[in-house]
Amino acid sequence: MATVRTVVAQLLIPAMNAFRATGQTARIRLLDSAANEVAEAVAAGEADFGICSIPMLEPTTRFELLFNDPIVLALPLDHALARREVLDLSDLEETPLILPARGTGNRLLIDEAMARVKRPLYWTYEVGRSSTAMELVREGVSAALLSKFAVDATQVAICQLQTPVSPARLAC
Image (cartoon, rainbow, N blue to C red):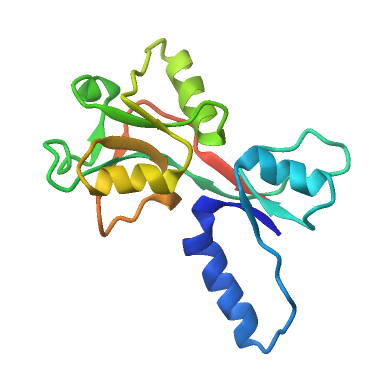
């Protein structure tokens, strides 16, 4: 099985625990990778199935929607905007932002949304992993645009974005 890292804690661990609780003893090979690598692993036969947000444009694979994972703004709990439920991008002009690295599934969604509204989004930090962005937010470094599945709401504030960023469409 291949998967994006953001669904491991909230989706896969409970599923694997439930699987084992029924007495199953099968071995599970888990490839945790970026979305494009997950799709490639399935297409190449390295994984029987994958969970990712980028459909593989390969005639031998099927992309079936499991659920949508919205892009949200994660903020340090003491941030001035942390008490707001919904924010417009203009509210973020003075806020240093953490964005996913170019070429990642979530970055593509964010860049597409910014192009649609013809508004550039300036980042201060660019990171390859959502867990790195979460660490930076938790430690008060900055705010991050992340998939909701990647955000631990017990440690940071979450705000919805008024400017719609298409949700990550997680599928297998």
